[in-house]
Image 1 (cartoon, rainbow, N blue to C red):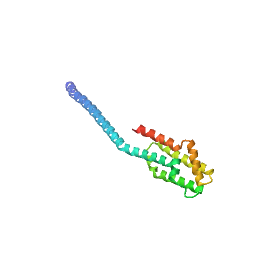
Image 2: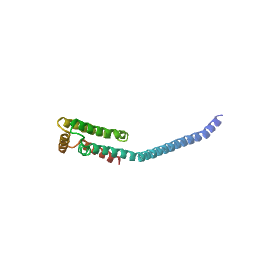
Image 3: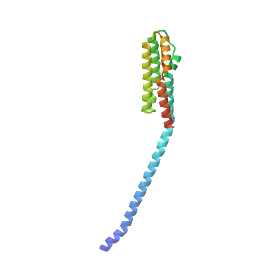
Image 4: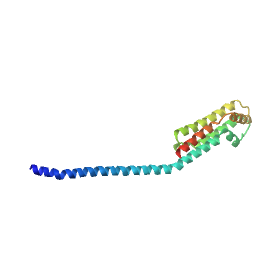
Length: 170
């Protein structure tokens, strides 16, 4: 009886060891295959999403250029001599541009979006400040041009931030 038991163990033990070795080898192989597939999927995902992200950065850079106060004044002429009406026209144009590009925040980093939003708010606030000391629409234009000839527009800071983010992507 004892001999049969030892003989059974002699047959079963190599089979069990072989089974464990096969299990661990196949398990490692499957894990490696899954890891390779995940890497390939991530690579494909990045490859597919990169053009979309770059387009979003392009559009937001264009937005910053369009709300640059100097370029904004050249593009939008006053309809009357009323300072407040012209200010509202400028702000409405900035808001319209912003709303048009609002969805692009999905594709860019939070820091970039914060920089762009801050630039927009800073431009609007500066326009309002300058409008308080202006007597007419033309005076407002003149004061804005003088003010921004002395300082760097906040849109330039946002553009620099966007360019830096794009360099990181590429």
